[in-house]
Image (tube, rainbow, N blue to C red; front, side, top):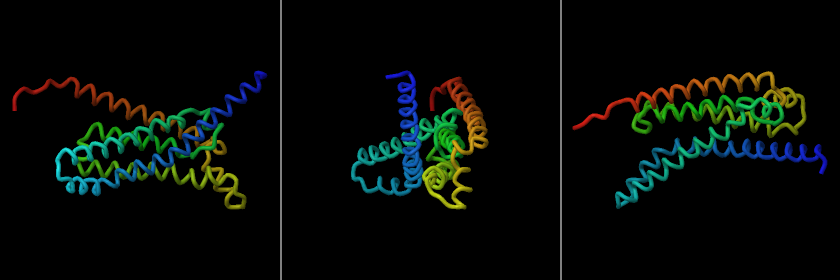
Length: 203
């Protein structure tokens, strides 16, 4: 194989992987949001178990799956922080902002009582709904509609795809990376503060 063929093969493989991640993120976003919305049903389901062990296992599995899907959403969204990927691939233009929403939910889980605080849990639902909308809507209307033709399609669709709207996608990518960095510093500061507390002895 010639060097050009090798480079083309690697480039095609890279685009295939990134396209697969982008498509999988649609399912992951919907699953993460759906599992959080399903919390009341899961709570009621624990009351049907006759053994406490069964209820505990059910709840542990539910919380574990819910949070694993959220982590996978954020890890998959890392492709939106690379300008060369945004230029080369057809991705939803607001996907980077959706990644910020996912990381913000993870930060809320870290710094609050999570399910034990209804106020912050509602904020998790709001951020997940916003993030899913920012990702799924431009992916369906933009990325999946690039082959359609028509006057309105030719105006709307290019603006929702990163490769045809780099003037918006790349600045959003940089802005989102900065926001994630700031939230990351908050998470690090919180962990350092918690680690620095002396454990209290006695009840």
